[in-house]
Image 1 (spheres, rainbow, N blue to C red):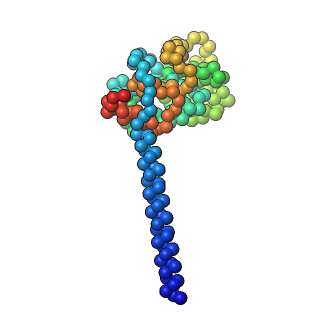
Image 2: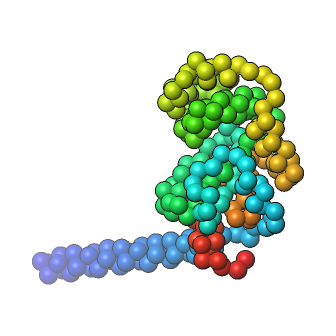
Image 3: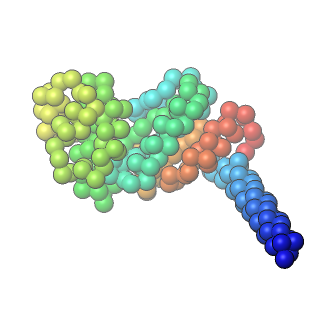
Length: 223
């Protein structure tokens, strides 16, 4: 009886081990397949005169970075908020090898996108574009519901009175007009739209895909 009991235990242990091994093999195959689908970025059409689109806008990163990401964006665009986080991670990962050029393209479907773009230019006048950009995306659901000075405080803008006066101006804004005109020339119809060293990508790709694009550009892989 005791012998049979021990045999049952041994059989159970063997079955358990077999299941664990099988699970690990399946997991390895699934994850290896996932990696294989992400190491190569998707085909993306090239824009030959892409450098002209990188010549204006708000730049984060050195001018001589080997990889430039031009982003046409909208502060009320949910996908742009997701992309902003991915681009920050990308820059942290690659440092001076990547620069991001932000360009405004507020969509007509977003009631407060133009005002947000104007407010970001007021922040830029005090050298705080990127912190304001980050503050708006961090609390995107508050856009249009709280004063712009709330985001300005989060962005540590030093002269709040000057910032507030700037946001109340309604005249033409050269930076906004310039970016929108550039987006129209490029045929931008949705945000975000990216140029990664001239390769046009529409939407917010996962970080793994962005990383693959950067690696391909750094290697100089034919495409």
